[in-house]
Image (cartoon, rainbow, N blue to C red; front, top):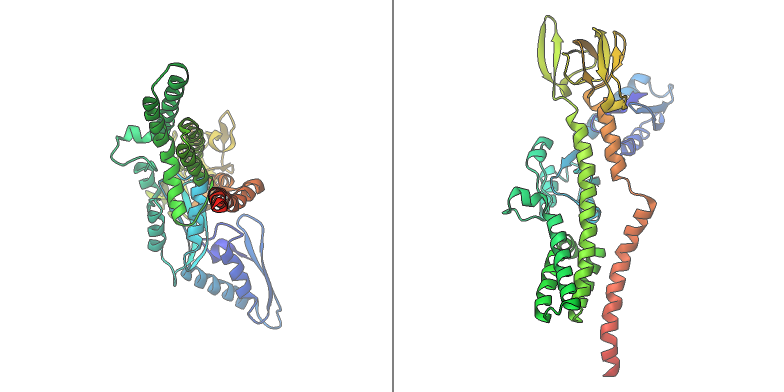
Length: 418
């Protein structure tokens, strides 16, 4: 048995397609008749072989050589993007990425603002992937820090003040609702002129339809039909029939739903970002008689980290010197600090309250408790229920069918009369 992270350091998901390819490649070697992944932390690759045909050392060498070849050729990357995505837009981006030649698999997590991609470097490169994302309106960044400080606000025009960009979606919804109400109440109860009421309805159309159109039209140009297209068509039909109030009310309701979706995604994304902020970027490491500051992701198991009182712990580890109260509420939810002594386990992201501690690293940065919590939160937010998956598949067929039916209803009666 060999640790999967040692063979394929970039693999984070045990269901990754590259693991399946690795297993199928191994069993084609003489003497190896089975290979599979065993659950655990980390997961392990278990190889079954005939010792009469191949030695254990040869099996390990083949596994490591194959892993190195896969790592060199097949890249696994997280590409952060700083444009808010709706669920429909995330699905469209995901399908567009998967159609790229050389893309093994892609998963777009709208809540975390990350696109997880695995691709063949002989057929595809990261620049091509980012170019596709930018063509679809999703600006990517090479560093998540840049993403935090250079946040884009989706459909909000770039020339607007930052404060207005922050509330752009909600401001449009409010404007659509107010203009609809003024037009409808004024026309129905206050004797407002038809032309004046129509002006308010037009503003409601523009405000309510703006965010919907910015998502629907690019998707339509790529052959994607969703409920946004259906709502725009319904509003246009209401306008052609002279029912401006009904069309304005429809767009207001649907834009309100979009705003609610944006709000939920922003909160989910902020939850992931809040977890990331708990992790220090550097640590004080004891190197012989010296104490040096090093990036956390460069620490190795067995390194000794010094954590002064008041600092967050940068690593998962074991206390080797000192006694102090640790606030573990960010990780475990415990309301009271817990006293830690030599031999006790501590977690990255928790807070040292009282005295300096020497902590021996027991988990690499990518495997520590905080990163696993972040990964579980991101995965949970990206999961779709069977009902949601069915709804998306149904919508892809339902919307075109409805549009075709409407066209037939419009065209057939005149043709029959003729």
